[in-house]
Amino acid sequence: MSEYKTKGKLSFKGDRETKKKKKRKAEISIDEGGNQEGWVFAEAQDDLIGPLFLIFNSESLFCLYCSEKDHSIGLQPLPVGKQLPTCEPEDIPSVFIGSRIIGSTDRISLKTFDGKYLASDKFGVITAEREAIGPQEEWTPVIREDGIALQSSYEKFLSVDEIAGGGYSIRADVETIGFCETWRIKCQARFRKKVKNTKKETKTINEYEIEQIKKYQTWGGGRIKTSKEEVTRSP
Image (cartoon, rainbow, N blue to C red; front, side):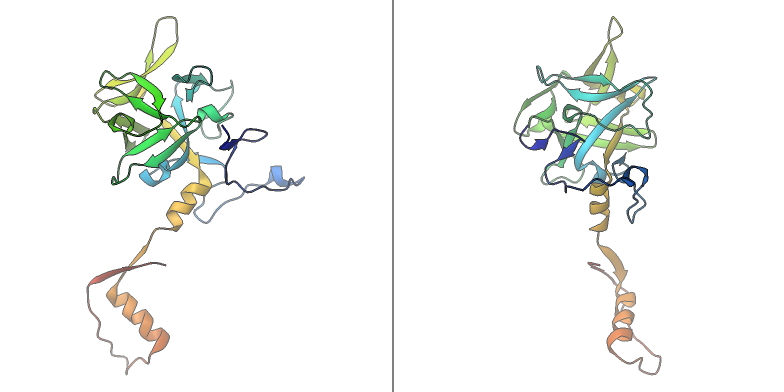
């Protein structure tokens, strides 16, 4: 818990302190990519790196939650009246930290507030007990138009299961994606902006050479001979 700030607004280690201003509440800040500050929907693999808020979009909204009491994984109802587009996490146990698995381009891990990793065994039982990442702690996101599904290393999907008495349990023993296997995942806008702004710009050698000739050389009578291969350079 020492890794996080727990007083006041939900924040994380490394967040910059800002002074309160009277008119700040009425302002909406937009970054260069068009994202508002705060929490926005994850739309791509790169958006799943950093703090994540996993929402089950049923008639009443629920979020994936790690119990502070026994560290079990379950669903926590969001306050009545909360709407999907604007809802945000209100406590640390409902936030998971996504990290890319080393050597992989499509697998991630999900760390709980107390440094343990979300895991599924071969029977689909969900736990968060280990501080190290193994095959059971690896998840493959499947991006869909209606949300994101998370597939375990046993090729089963993280699913919401309704149990007797009207409660819900979390399992990963379903082989196909349906409503109960689809999550709406939110990430912090500043992390998504950072990822997108660090992507390299791809230009053809032809475009690159013409750009350099215009900048440093003469046009040579208007005749320029360039290659047709592609080159990637940082912006």
